[in-house]
Length: 105
Image: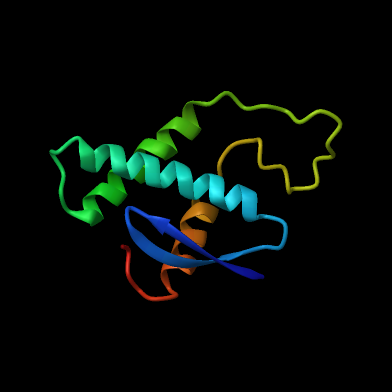
């Protein structure tokens, strides 16, 4: 597993990333940073933890609202990420990432 340094809302993080997943990780980081920046810049929420929770909820809602897409010519081997989001898996991955330093932000 490769480690990638990223910046979200001006804070640096070192995240674990599977080989070949860097572009997906960087895209996700950009989405999170954009969402958190928009909430912060809205001016009503100042606490970083609240901004992070609201951004996570906004992004999760957007994912849930997206229509499921079946990949073309892709076998159903359990690695298909185009289907429904496994929230438990997402929470486990977030917990694993946060366990590096124990800090949300």
